[in-house]
Amino acid sequence: MSDRIDSSKATRRLATRAVHAGEPEPRIEGALSIPIFQSSTFETAGETDYHAVRYLRCNNTPNHHSLHAKLASLEAGEAAVVASSGMAAITTTLLTLLSHGDHLLALEGLYGGTHTFVTRDLAEYGIGHDLMDGNRPETWSALLKPSTQAIYVETITNPLMQVPDLEQVVRFARKHGLVSIVDSTFATPVNYRPLESGFDLVVHSGTKYLNGHSDLAAGAVIGSGELVRRVTHKLNHLGGVLDPHACFLLQRGIKTLVLRVGRQNENTLALARFLAAHPAVDAVNYPGLESHAQHGRARKLFSGFGGMLSFEVRGGIEAADRLLGRLRIPKSAPSLGGVETLITRPVTTSHAGVPAKERIRMGISDSLVRVSVGIEDPGDLVEDFEQGLKGIS
Figure: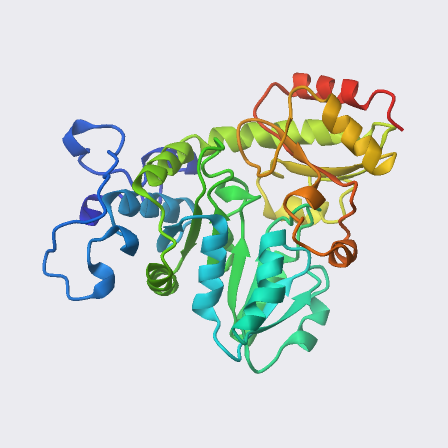
């Protein structure tokens, strides 16, 4: 099947690749959508390599091949592999590149699940780490050890929307022979393609923007053929496979990625500007605002500023909870990146597993509100937040 996949079409623009890259050529029985191959086992064809055996857990069904090719095309990578969740993609990647005695440099302020894995779980494997300030590259060399193997960052951090010095991360990694890994879930390939900037691997929670419809969990790793091969072999052993139906849904969701993210960029900027001017809001975190500390960097690197923002309501936790209860369009729920607007306090969801002292050190207050802006009419969203904030101070 894989030899029938139109995997790159690199000369085509992103919106065209999102629709057509990776699709079978010719179409299977003329079907415009790839069928769901609901089979765990396929006939052997003389394979001698364990990882080439056609078996669902080896991530090599027709649905996987097609989806991998589409993802690789979107991120301008040589290869891709999908996993059962974003955390499966992240943890498998780190366990592929790091072993007992190794050391990792990781960004301060990572997503809560990643933060916990790096700061607690890796120690159980005898793997050390240090956290780095993404805006102070002059301090990174002091954190290096002879055993440092990789550097891990996010394009836009969750939930404070900081943009680390990504260009310096690439330079630093190359200078010191480190594998550079970036979680680009918040940026998406629409706004930023890290491999084109020199990163070695990019990971995504496909649960979020890539799928865009809040109906599956998935992860993805994209990069060079050699690195993705190593991650795939580790994934095959650990078993974090994405099932064929989820592959189908993710592939379908990606086809509208450019349209969705474009609208979310516009909506979020409009809402961020409204909130920044509102007397009941103390601070807004969004790289699209001129007041954001890394706005200039974001303008230089990104095609758009993304669909995520966070803010502090004047009045603390009580005011924040009152706002969440008053809003009519946003749903109070975890996760992000779907077509519907979602709102949450990160201390109760994405960073609930991070101890309070660590959250404070990261700058995440108990009253911080995070919004994943959807594709609704921006006027309706602004009006809803306006009525929700009325009387709050």
